[in-house]
Amino acid sequence: MKYKISVTKYFSAAHNLRNFKGKCEKLHGHNWQVRVYAGGNKLNRTGMLIDFSQLKAILDLILSRLDHAYLNEIAPFNKINPTAENIAGYIFDAVKKRTGSAATITEVEVWESESSCASVAE
Image (tube, rainbow, N blue to C red; front, side, top):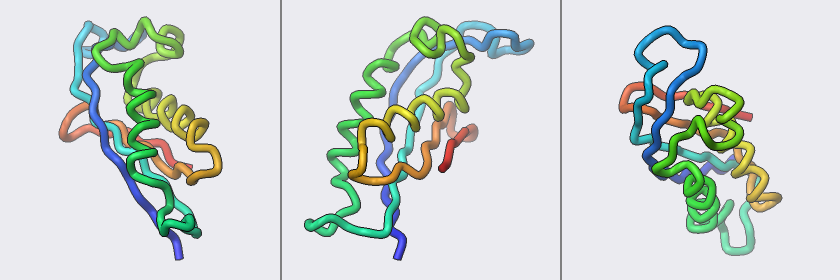
């Protein structure tokens, strides 16, 4: 049996896209929504894949660097474009690194609006 859980958090940040011709090349902001999915075949002794509060705390730590910031000034987005895709990849790697063997991070979704989302999945 495959188990899957998710947690959702929000942050607000500004960015602009380099080497892009269009509205998004200008400085603008979003109220970003981030959803992290964890999956696995085994539950721990408590009957959980990973405690929701543990996964939320990890995500809070990562998003605290991005919240109310100008993303273009924060590594790695000072070198790569702060697109929704790149933000999803950054969060995926950062969460995965911090959860260790507690759970397998399977997907991260980053919504920059109610209708626009990018995701990274393993």
